[in-house]
Image (cartoon, rainbow, N blue to C red; front, top):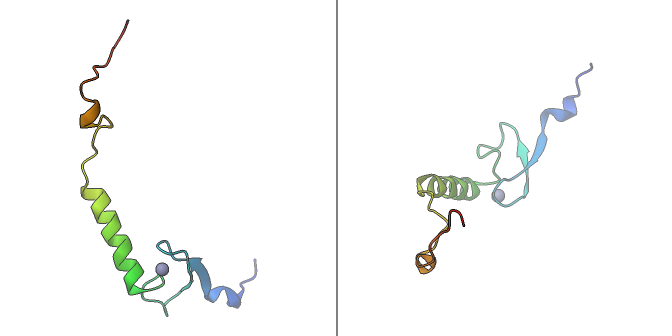
Length: 70
Ligand SMILES: [Zn+2]
């Protein structure tokens, strides 16, 4: 298999905004396009991580009791 030097600069999509970015050492924010997108993605991840998985039953529907069997 021969090496292709042109592959040194790989283009990927920013996970945050979908913009095409170079995935190499020239882009310190890779795979993001910018510091802003990187920060936003980390913040979104953290928010989702800290969020306690709530049950789907909403308080307004609480009066409806579930029937396990009939
Ligand atoms: Zn971006």
